[in-house]
Image 1 (cartoon, rainbow, N blue to C red):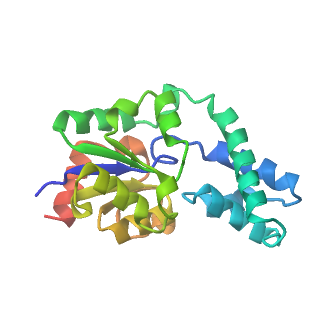
Image 2 (cartoon, rainbow, N blue to C red):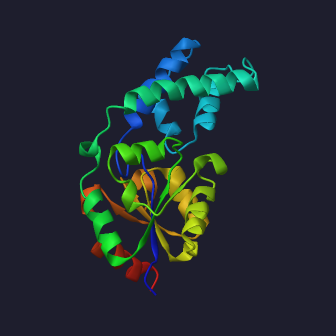
Length: 222
């Protein structure tokens, strides 16, 4: 049987707001006396806002320096800065091949879901004029961070599709682990040294198409 739904991560798959996340986290970290660099930032990809902040505080040996209320305030402050930055996002920021794939999936009657750690995902889809292509946006606020499979399970549940009949597209190791744990078929965007040698990989989203997804499904599921 052919797959019934495709689940997308957002950052690194549909567009790249990672730079904005990095700049906003770096600014917040500096404000509390912690220096983070791009290398450390790699650990935050695909991770929820609160969990990212906890990693930063642990990295700066300040995990015990703030109350839970203060941690929430810091996370909100970071998000406010990030929201200012993503006002610049336009349809021109959609990665190559993504719009064409979404159009193919819609024409084929295949359901599409978003499974992103970003609480700002609906706003980003709107700014990129992609909202109409998504049948569901799984809320990161309702589940644990990747590598927990919750976000993919929730997206599949919202679409009323068994995860086993879903393909999920990710660019982060935590996300790939979450897809495997959910029972969906992972497609990675990136390098094997980062995402593993046991999954289908494309080096660029421009290589994604309905035909490619069907080919991978037939290889690994049929």
